[in-house]
Image (cartoon, rainbow, N blue to C red; front, side, top):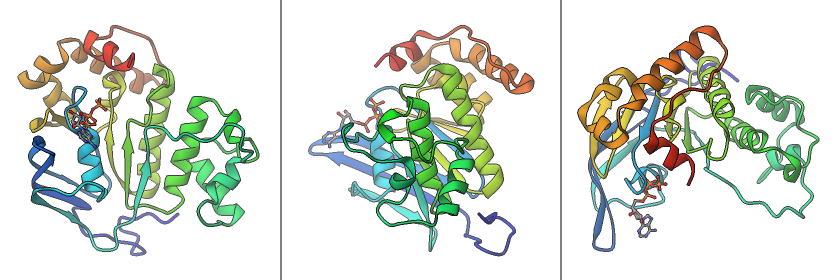
Length: 264
Ligand SMILES: Nc1ncnc2c1ncn2[C@@H]1O[C@H](COP(=O)(O)OP(=O)(O)OP(=O)(O)O)[C@@H](O)[C@H]1O
């Protein structure tokens, strides 16, 4: 897969995607007010926010699935988006290997499928049945399918829901590696506050509107963010930094807002 930045092979203008004054309504209810955001090539932007704060709606609007009532969404010309959903329900009785799944809806050469699985960190699961994968392997298979198309922008909607904390941390590390290898931009939603804050270049805290935005440190210290998620995440951020510095993972303190979200 070519690097996107500086390779001259597939340079995409910056930003990859931006919204300005984006406002979305369901019936009489306005769920997104005046959202301005952008994602540049090669950056990881994470959206955090409480349940019902409009995160999935924002992603759906960016993907073109929900029309805004006001504002605009601009995508770079020829933008290729890879999307990893929160979950995908497959009929467990349907025999389907991972290789075959990667070939849907159209066949891909075996070498490309193998490369995508390697990029996703699961090089050996090609012959396995989709129904027999663990939760983490299943999400990696979805990630492989998303990166198969060499996306300029990878969008993940709570892709680690259902994974345990080390599984989530490993998944986000893999996302950082994919970004480093390909230069793609990443826009993701996450409830894994413990691990995601530090895996991001920028964090956008959403609650119907953008409450605060900035580097993980800036957002973790912002009063609006702390009102929504409590004080615990600053410690979690330090914990994650520790994990990152030492390439091992310790369980640690957890703020209750996150526990409730994770338990959903
Ligand atoms: N198709 C729909 N029709 C009507 N209301 C909807 C629809 N989808 C979402 N909503 C409402 O819009 C609001 C935002 O929902 P959304 O799923 O975007 O939030 P979220 O931040 O992703 O939530 P969660 O963290 O629980 O996944 C909620 O009040 C939800 O009930």
